[in-house]
Image (tube, rainbow, N blue to C red; front, side):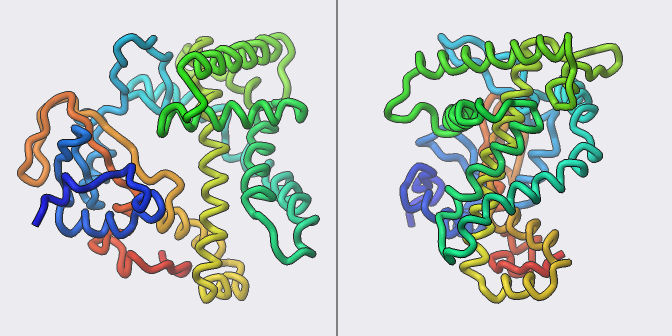
Length: 328
């Protein structure tokens, strides 16, 4: 039997279409293994994924610099404590539970306005009509981006996601990507400067004002934080809405349970996040020699932790491959 770890190809079209059979094989035959073609370790089991993501002393989120490329400013997404702790503390002061609570009525109104023209039709492209525009409108309003800039805002978000994920598309090159980041830097720098002199009730004003133990975000950190919020508040939410619609269409019995009992909605959303995660994988880099399942990982080696696989691990979730809105 060929080594399944070497046959695993995350770029294969069939895997991208439906990765879950490959995850199941991974958990069974190679819960932790080294893929020679990509030069990375693969973690499929919940136990290993969780232990790696919780141990930032051994497994770093910091991306090593690419030769010939400028080192990007620090981002909360690609930093470790204590820098990550500081950045998170600063943004937490601006992005409070109270702020989110105040947004709920506005988000409900926006969703209703987007659904109103398509509801009588009985059919629609739900991504185009709802999942795509709703998050970008909301995150733009949270940050304080004016309505006339939303299209530009969305274009930037799509490009950043592509750079973080698969790299440039067929029509992109490094120069185009760099030009876009220069555009974003200039735009957000101007907005931050305006908020310093004339604060408003928006997140950029709050981030400019936020301070933790005498430390504020410098200009590079502020820019990276705004880019991160742009992506985190946009792309992942679009995916979540689309995935939720898809799963409820595929499981009409579960949809009926929610329609009959709206108190199940919070658990149903959690189940979508588990069953069809908007983020399927994240990576870590070993800071020191480590051993997992009797295999030695050398310092500097990269591990792909397959969150989408861990979330269906039968060792943790009873009937992990079943979509169940009543799951705790």
